Length: 226
Ligand code: ADP
Ligand code: MG
Image 1 (cartoon, rainbow, N blue to C red):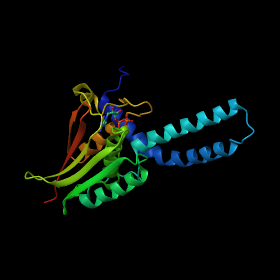
Image 2: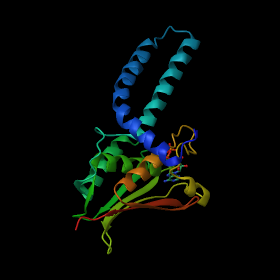
Image 3: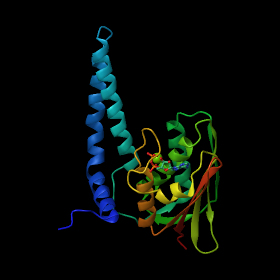
Image 4: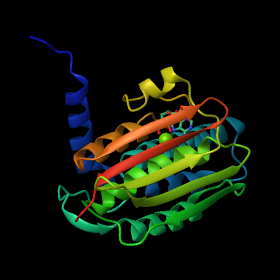
């Protein structure tokens, strides 16, 4: 009997579990967080205040894991929605702009019209948000993130996400997408795993170019609807 799971089996199990549970778990967690904040009254002992603070931080960490795995909407297995990529990119930019804490990061877009693909909107958004979040997090002192899309000569829609952040070594690039691989203090190491899986489920390709202390570029290629 082999108890060890292959990476691909792990990915499948993780993705099935999250599709089922992620949405249901978030609401009760918000309720618990609210009550914890109410408990935090001025007269409490330092010990009790500390326990409440730690509980809230742990809840926030759980929420981060859920966000990396599944940000939007109900999950669906339909990968055949007709999607105009430019329109979706603009929506994702609006979401990420309201969400990003780092005011020094500027998001710039250059979007080609009429780029159509078959995909799943929720999953595409999830993937783009995970990659954009990493791009923003890679520039603690601010900078520009470029998000562009256009058509290639050989039938693909090309989405480009480029930052001027801390970059990665070759070894780091090679490990990208393995479950729980993270170099961040409170990272989940799930965002890239999910993103790679999503792009493959669309029969797309994802490429990474990165240079330490220079920046990183993700290129997503998705079959164009002719
Ligand atoms: P997390 O963001 O929670 O750490 P991810 O799966 O999203 O997990 O990313 C895994 C790791 O890949 C990150 O911890 C980081 O080291 C590296 N990484 C991903 N994107 C970038 C980027 N744009 N610039 C630099 N490093 C990155
Ligand atoms: Mg991430």
